[in-house]
Image (cartoon, rainbow, N blue to C red; front, side, top):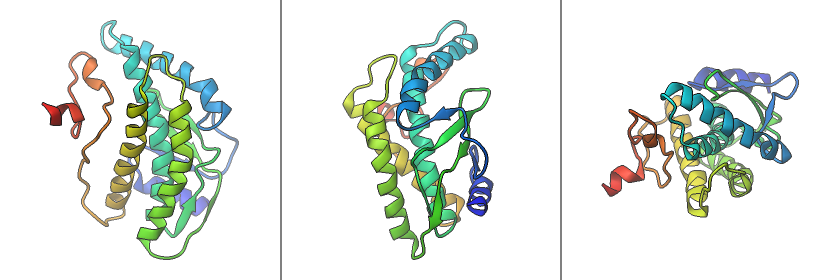
Length: 204
């Protein structure tokens, strides 16, 4: 598992993966995310208010945190599949946050050999991701309302983006920003605009 964590970390641009040590402070599944998600959102809202002259719409933090949680699960499973013949369990993942409250380190729980060709391996990775991500997104406690369509769309979008990024990091394809069906709401922050691939841009 240590070899997998090291190689995955080398390829990833913003996450580091750890294979040893105690669980990290924030659990992403089960009771852990229920206990930690609201505090994470409140802290991010306050950070935004410091950064943006008192403006910190709570809905932005609510969606950002859900997106990051899903990204960690998606990137863990997708990068394991494309970095080597491995299958990383999405169960019991824990993370440490960086100064901007973005996930920085992921503590892996299990990585097992998964020989065979890449596409079936990625299909198994996606199934592992969805098994955890779908109930996680549905039950995620948000400080403002996130509708069921937005929650489901985030699950889909985070997998598509993670799989494309993991393929690109492995040199399999050139990375392209995928079109999204979900919006991260970053445009609600002063001076910010919609992301590339945002559904608001396509509708406009």
